[in-house]
Image (cartoon, rainbow, N blue to C red):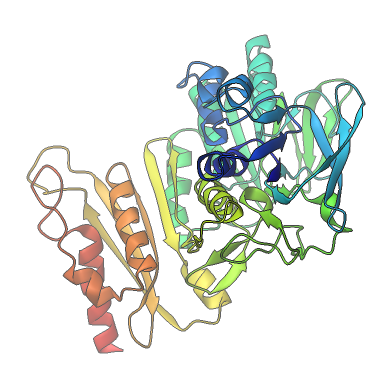
Length: 449
């Protein structure tokens, strides 16, 4: 069986390893446009600020490992330009040599990932304008930092924008974040986002609301930016305006694409075209709560989808069970966790909801170093079905958000959440875990409605 995989990172290589394991006669060709396989994109901000010592620490397996140890035809600098699903051919060119290639497949996996979205501003090609998606991006930013910078402007207040704001601030740089709307981190509700804003202020990170970048100014290098309100001198512009799927080469194939270009797949990671699969940041994900497909590109999803795709391509029957939208972020001294729907998202989905916020402690208040923890639960008005949770604090966020994600996956109500048998000892928790305290108040609110 001849397998061709487009993309050599999380989804693609998770699939390749399953093919290697379950089809001993597999011929596996991977076409990677870049030069590096299997690297940890989520670790890139921590290389820039020096917490992770080297870019090389982010590489899980080298290209040579896939070639020499696993016997795969792992190619680099191979850009796919066209897929012929009738003749089962993948064609393109080597971006280094300019040489064309054309490869036949029996089964094809598109794991081509996504690219940073960079609007076509005037001055966007100046030196000093960056995104954070590849190891080459990281190396370019680090070189700029080494050459000396003082002021950084970040466009976008989502997860990447906040992570990069932290990185540059830890390096002692002046940092401003430009946000088009009135709220940072819009995946969170306003009350929770306020905690993030206060943390930014405590650490000297400037957040500018309703400021739209209109022009990047300079001759060869960035010297300033102009927004709809004023001009700011700056040395670096970091664009964190979201991700776009890399699927241009599929537009003439008849493969079903979403408006943003992401690929629709079923639970087996199959597209609507026979023998063509998709996984990772180029694909859609099924949301278990809203029960619709959405585009939520995260490394955890990419690895799971890639593994499921590889199993099914090799003839093993395994379904991708969908997502609950779980994420966590370190921002200065806070951890920011979210799973499921916020109030805003529940409203947009047309779900009648209630919500409850509690401010608690990470563990027993009499035990030293108890930290504040803010928990918000969103639940269905008619029956208390848990819809989502948000947790922000200096410690213990990861534990709580994962419990809430598990509860969402299993379609639990807030009353059932209250009944969970969670671990307790004074150094680790209170007799009532903060999420169960929130659940108790949520149950009371349901009874009073």
